[in-house]
Length: 170
Image (cartoon, rainbow, N blue to C red):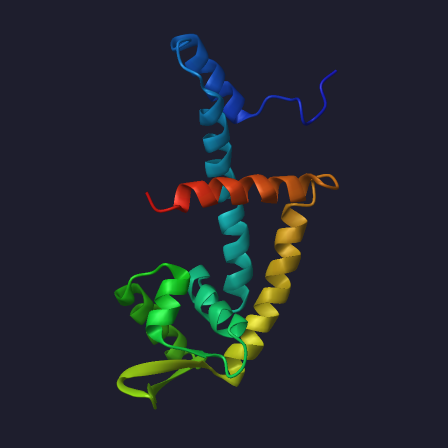
């Protein structure tokens, strides 16, 4: 009898079908990539529901979280935020506009460079991102709880290695 870990999943069916049609191909990586894609499709909406409780979209949470992680005085330039979040300046401007309208951030002229702005987390933004992060952490922990002791660390190590290699400059 197979355990849950040995039971075929939807990706196994896809890989098996390709194996029948193209036995000349090594499809091991296709299975991994397919599962990573499916995980993204499952985890993304589960995380979005948490952010939505706080009136945030994922990208807005990311901006508030970057400001919160920066430490006191919870202030960064738009360029620093764009670089941290790997986002275009236009995309960052849209997020900042929405967050400012919601009262979660303030824009102020940079005292050291009057051509630039600084983005500061407001008290409301601080409270919101802290509450959202608490619930987000519990949610992700719950979502990944089927992994046995040690498996989460192994998965984390393997994914870190893969990302380092894929994100390394050519």
